[in-house]
Length: 263
Image 1 (cartoon, rainbow, N blue to C red):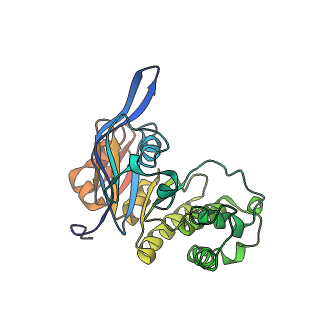
Image 2: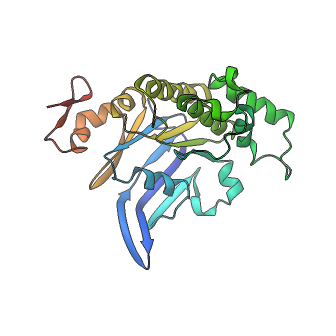
């Protein structure tokens, strides 16, 4: 995919992420320079504890960076107020939702909150966007069910529909395939790929499903101990990036099959 002339949705410049407590900084990763372009599916991969969730929380302003800059649509992240940011990016986390007594339609409708009036009345346009989001995620048959009645895979599709209803340029998901079996992991990631093609939105997700991400993503952000690199899966394979992800005593990356194998 040629991205040279594509609009940059998100960009970081010399970003350092981590934590500050009692004037002591703990650096998780530094010198992060990435660009996310319009209409791309981007996977974020790395070993457990490398800092994937910290990076996503920092990019979405859930936690502060230690240094460096983050831009969304060429504007400093720090310059967005809450409503502006909610109209620009939507976030799907792995935490259990607290509103499982809502119907699927009602949960998806929460995505319209940045646009509704102070009492939350839905306009005709809001309802059309909600219905479209439900169709795009293939959950029409679930819209009247209560969320507590859903399987993990069904609930994940509902959460993606809510993010679509928020109608943002950028959707960020933290490990959307957690707790799913192999079929539903592939289904969710294939759905994200289709949504990128159908909507031209930018979708960034973190995942441990590296083999699937290699097959489906336009770009991959690979976090290793000393660097964070973004490139196409093909270029990562050529440059040997995946060989740096894990200790070589147990698994290795096979370039021919583009997959990890047990020694």
